[in-house]
Image (cartoon, rainbow, N blue to C red; front, top):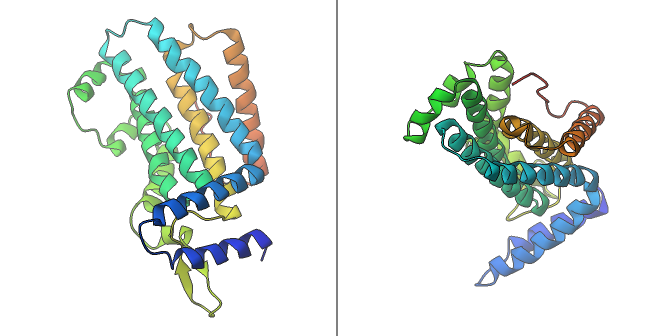
Length: 253
């Protein structure tokens, strides 16, 4: 077992014994340790996420150049902002070591993506969404030519979002007693989960960026488009180096 993991197990055991009003303060301090560790371990992936978020902010700012009169425009901008904030929240949880808690946010980003994509294809359907109509993601995905790919990815995220045993692996660690596991309280350091979900974070950000930017292509300069192409190439290289840890949708919108 690597030294970092041994240290983390020691801290996990200490965390389980915390009592009193300073528990949050103590766990916050541990989160800061985890963040520093995460930046050392997956700095390359976090830099790609930084690039994606920078380009995403330019997209959001470009929407201010449009008078949002059409319902489809209003809906698209609303969903783009929600996806941006979900990605930021997932990033904050990931680097602090709350691995399982990132997964519902990735699913939420995918739901935002599917609705933005639907409204790009069928702008008239944005009106009922703005009026509060609930849209089941399965119904939305059925409208896509690549619905099977979207459905498989969404189903995987849903399995890990629900309170079932599968996702509890992200909270558990082996104890000194054979075949006995204990559960982490708070964030912790796990390189396997960190690398896997960092790839998911970057992939989710680039896909959301591709869809969110679609209506604003003419407002985004050539430098933006060149930067996005470079980011996409880096993502493909990351996916190959990760041995297919996550999927990338290269289809047209």
